[in-house]
Length: 464
Image 1 (cartoon, rainbow, N blue to C red):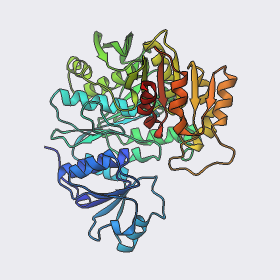
Image 2 (image 1 turned 45 degrees about the horizontal axis):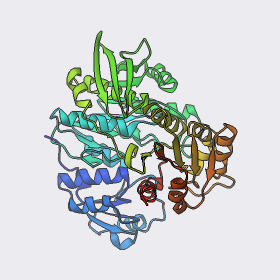
Image 3 (image 1 turned 30 degrees about the vertical axis):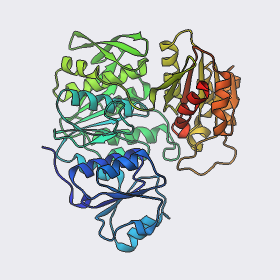
């Protein structure tokens, strides 16, 4: 049986309860019987889902939203110090708990799998959640995106396994003590919090070092940052290391990836035996995520052939190459990719899945700091498309940086030979794309911001 509610979490108040990470924790606590409350900037389907679980969700932020008897206030790193509910918590001497500490408390007493890496976390965590559920193990899970099947980002299960997406962006993944730690890749990102690759390696080393004695690190044998991390933690005596990938030295070796339209067939070599299974999303990037999930499940003692079959039941995550629909012979697909490596992986995957089709991209850069550091690489990635529309930067939690605009990306894209157009008014994009698209084309909306809202609007314009 899964444990109950930590005492500090009996009456939690979440500031920004509608966020992907925050809402997942709130849902688990609500399902465990906690009296959950919180606030968010705007109404959403997530807010309604939380209310259906018995949570109180306020729209807007105000001191009066915080109940005097709240047991704690849960915040993420995105919550600013002048938030009125946070100030009210200080007046009432209500403890303030970071989201990562709240999640760590929910994992206590369970066999935790923590999935880390610069990209691929949500997909890999989702694959594990689906496969373990399919095998009747009833895991708890907290994911940074909604599963396409169950349609939720978190659940409270009665089994003894907890699968969690472990966020490195603010070093919060250092709070967890997993039995299995997965590291998919290690790259420079989150420039507001990390000044160098050495800082990132140090952070990942701390995360890996929190693995329980006798636990396992599942790590890529192909990606250079992951290989360097493996070298750095190799001497941790209590740690079992399992590598995966196409390298001949990998413990779980990827023998072959065969594209099958919008799916892939993956063959691995494990303990000297060949094992083949299906991955429901295209491209080697996602195939490798599935192999990481397979290796992690095996590390928990689950038979590999059972896992392989169950992984075939995974049907995707919202915003990870999610087909939004088709109109006038044009398919519209949504991608969360916002780092150049992710962008390249998704664009190459779509190229492989739909050979002969034109690929049109609507890209919305995410964060000023990321654009400042990686804008050139983003532009170069867009050269893989036949034509691109680039929107203004989605700021999320950041204030503007002087001189940092989408022009950095557009100039780099043009220098790489890309056909790229700047569109500053997001509302104009559906008409622009409808004028560009022809039957047989693929349209990819790409970015971590609200560009995802454009898919249905583009489909409406194509239909009219």
